[in-house]
Image (cartoon, rainbow, N blue to C red; front, top):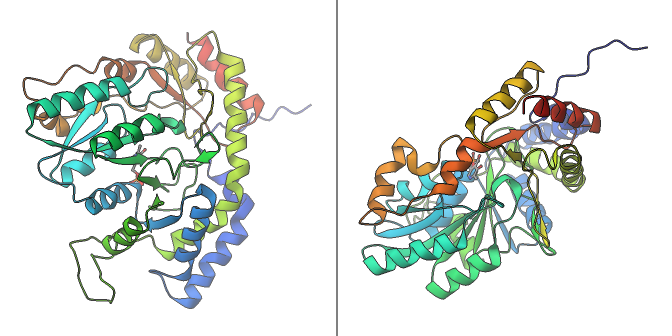
Length: 386
Ligand SMILES: Cc1ncc(COP(=O)(O)O)c(C=O)c1O
């Protein structure tokens, strides 16, 4: 009989995956050390082709991070001062940071409590307020596929088409997610990916990509990521940035991509085990018919902040990690509160769902290498704290 303690449960596990592909990674890096094209090497072209094939998008442009993917996509539209960019109040900071860096005004929109994604009715309401006031030009909607679940892209796209706005998918947490038979990457005008190490497809540093079906946009993205370069080197066509994906990160992604399909299935299986163990005791994430979540993050909703604190304490005592994504809605962040107040004159309407979720959400360990027994240990520790 074994008396060995069970292995610690990781919140994200990059080591189990690395053990499977370590020799490909070593060989990929060694090839780059040999050919010496650290920037814009052949690995970047190869991974762009592979990302396009995986997502179904016609063009994939590798960039230096998910944040830079959002920035380059917005720069290509000429978004700047006087422009309103609508985005959820309940998301990671980068979604709001980028329009502000470009001089545009983020207009925070509430989210749907079931999907955690942008609430279309609230979006239409705030759009009408901005239009009525006439001070800012409605230019773009950034839909975020929070935790891996696709936002309601058919509705966002239709709204953007009606009002001449740019639809940008922040799929940083959701690569591999789908609506119907189409993966994320073709549902908006452009889709931003992050390859931060803990994402569903992550590299070993910073990296990102922009997916689009629009050839002229893709060409602009390639120019903007290389200082606005024109047809020839040192011809500067426009103000750009240094936003390239480097060859070594591209090689890491090439080694990992063959695992992704299977890992997405494993994530869905883990989510199923959580659902079986927790449904009826806490609010578990639900995937609408026709949607496929990438299960980037697994998040339950507890009744309130006190219940969440008790559960977190119980999990901590059992040695099980948990995390809060996110503890504060963006319109309450010191850096964004001023822009929020200024976005809609007379005071923007409240954002009650985003505020409430920040007290209620708790994310549990989620990665493709969790076992059913480990999910059982997480669930038991959570339930013991209820
Ligand atoms: C929703 C969302 N948007 C954007 C980003 C930014 O990506 P990156 O860290 O690669 O810049 C992240 C990363 O965590 C994210 O979760």
